[in-house]
Amino acid sequence: MEKPYILHMITPTKNLSPFDVNMALDAGWDNTVGYTNVEKDEVQALVQDAIFSRGPTGVKRTGIFLGGREMYLAMDMMENCQEAMVPPFEVSCFADPSGAFTTAAGMVACAEQALKDKFDTDLTGKCVIVMGGTGPVGSTAAVLAAKAGAEVKIMGRAKDKSQRVAALCNSEYGADMIGIQGEANDMIDDVVHMADVIFAAAAAGVQVIKEKHIETSGRLKVAADVNAVPPSGIAGLDLMGNCEPIAGSKSGAVGIGALAIGNVKYQTQHRLLQEMRDSDKPIYLHFERAFEIAREIVKG
Ligand SMILES: NC(=O)c1ccc[n+]([C@@H]2O[C@H](COP(=O)([O-])OP(=O)(O)OC[C@H]3O[C@@H](n4cnc5c(N)ncnc54)[C@H](OP(=O)(O)O)[C@@H]3O)[C@@H](O)[C@H]2O)c1
Image (cartoon, rainbow, N blue to C red):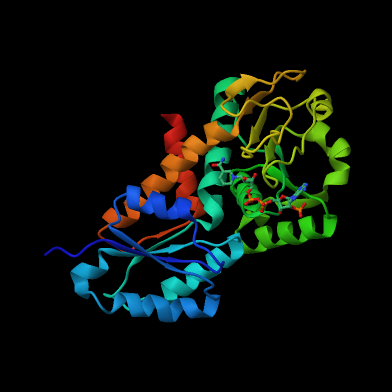
């Protein structure tokens, strides 16, 4: 009998995400097993327990998924996971905490494609403002945009928290070539006129960009929103909108709504789960590979 594909799903939170479980089974994993409330230092023992029981063919049909609520913790856990491997007993691992890596990859890839299609340009040197930038989706989007050459501002309700998150993104993920900055939401009226791109990644159901910001944002080209819970994170954006002009924008900006981004996110996560299942060699997947795939998807 052929061994089944087993995905061990580890999360530091109380619950595993049902969304991720569905995604894994739909991508071809036969079984998912959840481990909740897992601390970073417990990852090694769990992974080693998983790799030694199935022999060389079995490890190829075994994978680790890392969830949770934080970008940094998921990346630290992935490092611990990688260090726990004992070749040839080695399995693939994919981190996507709260879907943040695939969601941010979808959002940045959609915005980048809109810049190309509508304005014949890219993210290099563009000013990108990330509302809700201290959360998992926002901080990942900030890192991806900075690595693509943008000058990024992480916005949040408290300036010191935004600065702390910006510093972490810079030091941990190589965004320091350009330097992400942190700013308070209170300063939005002062910074919005500089924005070429706005990402709305604040908590669900919170509108962080109002009509007046769209009207006064004279350089704005693309505004993208991942919040699918009314009201929209950016005033005037349609949930399904995919590069429609935003009413009131004097600069001819286009909007990308949460469901358009969600569609790319879904395909990206599906492909990463399949890639991990089908790979002959152990692979370690996180926001960088997610962005590569999302870019391929939006190019069509
Ligand atoms: N479309 C998709 O496929 C998809 C997939 C996953 C997630 N999402 C959506 O993506 C968004 C971001 O997800 P997430 O998990 O990163 O969000 P989150 O952690 O819940 O919130 C992100 C940030 O929003 C800020 N925030 C919280 N409450 C706020 C309020 N009342 N007013 C203003 N700001 C507030 C917080 O930053 P400060 O404390 O620094 O202000 C927080 O760090 C959510 O809307 C989520 O529903 C969409």
